Length: 398
Image (tube, rainbow, N blue to C red; front, side, top):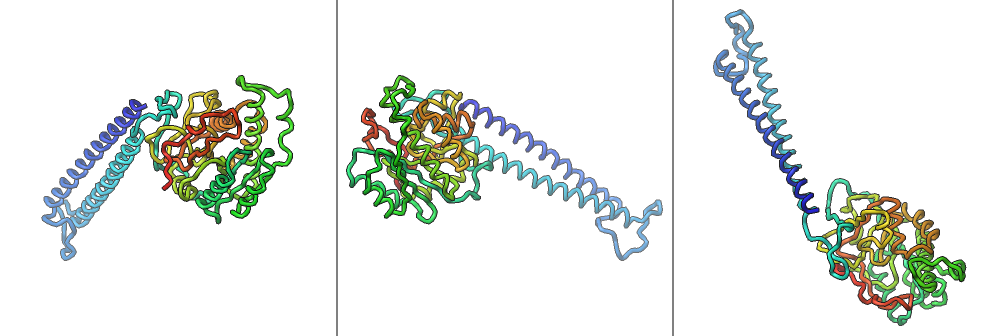
């Protein structure tokens, strides 16, 4: 990738130099023409270019009015001088644009390739691009409204820890602009204290009172060699995500952020998110992850890329669980429907990138530094281990 960027940078520089030489040559030619014309005027009329208004008998040897001749020449000189001034302005613009392009492509070559959570070098399928501000970005006309969707399943943690996380989330958002929807899954429907605290904090609370009977059937399809217990767990998670996305879709917002209930957020993270949003180079992005387990030296954001549709469906680079994924609201209805229809097929953090990046062909990004940190080592599925190693390396609270 660096070699390709170097070639592009070199090409930009060469083109800029060629244009510079052409304009410089044209300026010299125009300047020389002006000098010759002024010399011609002096030879024909003396030292002045302007006609002598006090002499009404200005005649040349052919009897023509020398005032007319001099006026025409003076007009020609003025036109040429104007042409030179215009050439100067165009040349300045070319130089300015050349510098701008040089800076842009310098950013393309900054930093090293990202590493995965184990510190291994990413292979070519996970190409990333680091681009800051450019002309094809989200811009400043986006709205500030976001629905934060918090799916909450039964988790073996203390009441104090649960309450602390909820209050921490409430303290880092803008209650005037940010809507929080907490959805208790069927296995968490008896958690009345959580509901009470959520309502005190101004969250909207939805309780699943029916569950997913079709997932509890004995003859569910098994995929990826997973046990029936694991397939049921991950399929219910997919269905819960679909349901809470549909809840947020009812809100008057522009973005929806899926946020797991075992995370901590950066200080005023929604303000920071919307401050960084205009630098994203595609206003029609599919999703942005606010968390990953990637080692990255990029700043502001990186683009997530995969070489094939299949690659998108096998946990796309940098997702590392659906911990904190933000979508444009326009994407949400189709995504919610797709998740519900395919809940048995794959884990939710495979289905989401597969649908958005693989099938919908939308661009996806990671916000850097990450605005969300994964905290819990206790999974909602007892067989999951090693969750204490799921950490963001770029997260900064301040």
